[in-house]
Amino acid sequence: MPEAFRQLQDQMLRKPGGDREMVEILSLVLHHDEQAVLCAVEMALEAGVPTKTHVLNLLHRLVDGTPTDRLDVTPPSSLVLTKEPEANVARYDGLRGGTRHAS
Image (cartoon, rainbow, N blue to C red; front, side, top):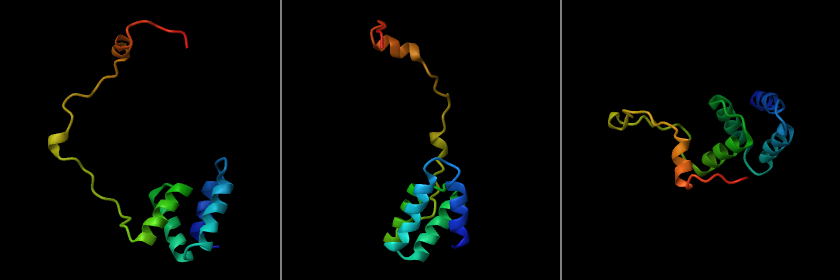
């Protein structure tokens, strides 16, 4: 088994249900090129997101030809917050009419 699959297996077996997810990832080679699956696994490991969902997302992007590299999402300086928002749960209670109901 390629090293990337072994690394993924080590990480996945540490969490509940990881063995099942690993089997599902390995079974992807029955429907897709093994090198494409391996590439998706390597990319997921590099990104630090070793999950079945992320591997599937990357694999479909590779198969479809969608770019898999990250885009620069730095917001322009005009969108910087000047005042941090504050959580105000009292405002929510006011919207409810101030009456407390048993839950």
